[in-house]
Image (tube, rainbow, N blue to C red; front, top):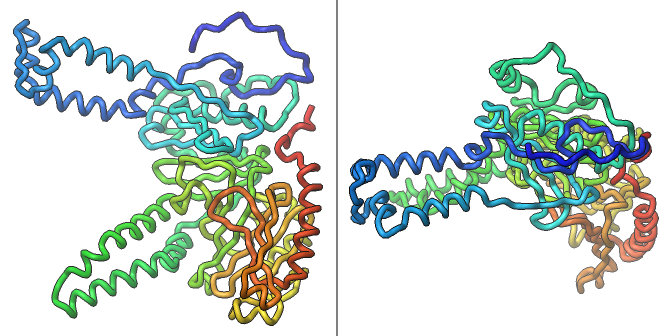
Length: 491
């Protein structure tokens, strides 16, 4: 830790923020002592060891004061022609180089903590602050595990608008622990401490269901079809060229399937005072807290083969992208890899608290699994069968206080929910076919992500009414939104 200037006079009680660590005091602090090794120092040590093993003779001559030979030997090359001082200066420059990044509190989209296995052995963790904007994330590699947790609390408290008296320091229960005891405790402890979230808010993904969902996923089916097709062509023709032709494609799909499984192990979602906590991983643990108001759209979808067991998946659009990969291998866009309908409704209640009312959840339930106008859904007209052969009865929208629901798909079913304060604009357009049929296409624009909130084949007059009503409602919702300062009322 660097030397600190004399402390400033204490602020008035109404402006003092309760913090969990001393890392948010405006001063510079050092990272974990093992940071150089964890950020690539092990590779550097391996390279140096290899160079030394390949240059024993030159090193021996250097120790005896003899002149090295520039014969391709790395040590001989460095010790001739005055190159050694320049090499040392280059290494020193790489070691002392620093970077400086800043992120505005009101643009923080989430705080992610990743604990790789080797970092956990020395009690270190990587903290990443997801900030809205291109390449705007702030990343700290590495902090001590306790400092990472405490700094996340500090950041979320500051971003929430908390105004309260400074909390008294919490004494460690059970007295001080040795280094070994602390490492064993961190390796064996659950990802989510029981005191962090109410038990009734926790949703977990069980390993058996996870395996079943991967086996029945469209990606796995595609993998098997290409594998069988390549093998069949090879047997019929007597040549193995077909297998080699599809091998890169199979390797890509297989990597996706394996990554989806490993990244979904020990998956859990829970409600905390500072937002939704998502954790996953086996050897490398990752957990991220998504503050209220940072979810720009939510999509519940069901692949065809999940229809019989009744499983669904939830993914989201956010204004930032975390470097920590989520369950689907994308940038943490999958919030629930697989769950039944009741679990889906629980997670939606955590992500969008405005939908937690019983009446709203009933409408959402109908939007997920039903067709027709039940629940207040407005669907495509009968003439839309020409462009929506199977899904025209299901294709439609509904509105709840503060949210827009778009329901599509009869074979691959999905429901998209957009909070009105997160809507950026509304689009409406007609192509020549839609113009002939009296239909229109609606777009609800949010931040860029895997979800496109759109609805086609709607009656033209219905679409115009939707455009007018939602446009006015969104303006009012944005003006009244205060979720970005979710604790500003505390004193």
